[in-house]
Image (cartoon, rainbow, N blue to C red; front, top):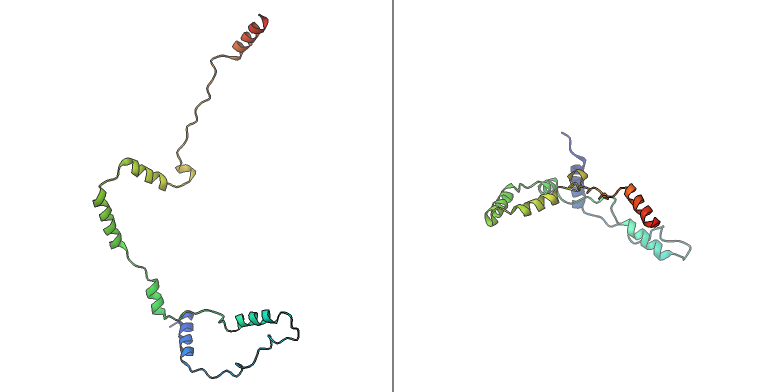
Amino acid sequence: KAMSSSILRKSLQLFEEDQPKGKDKSKGRRSKAVEDSSKRGIRKRRKRTADHVGKPKSSLSKESALETYNRNKSVDLTEDSLYYLNLISNVGGKPDAKTVNTILEYNKGKLSRNQKKIEEKPKEQSIFSDKDFEDFRKEYLNS
């Protein structure tokens, strides 16, 4: 029977927490990384090393696999949804066609195939031809 690595890690972590911890021999001493012959930047170095020393490499949660399963288990909301749909249908009756169309237009999406096609109006053409304009110009300038 194979045990997943995450469950194994969690159980080992729980056993480590149960064991009594002895006194650290190196607790009173300063680390060698902090002590430096140069005085410049000692505070920064101390802060930098202090940030990294006590932090665990991986942050494992302290909850069991059963708690994780129960937390992530999907909830069936069908009954609640039906209840609310029933309330909506009984309250206002049917919505008017304008409201329905507005909602449908909004939810159609922004794809070009779903957009209304705008009909281009043909360019208004003049009732006079180019020949008429030339005749008028000749007549106007010659008189």
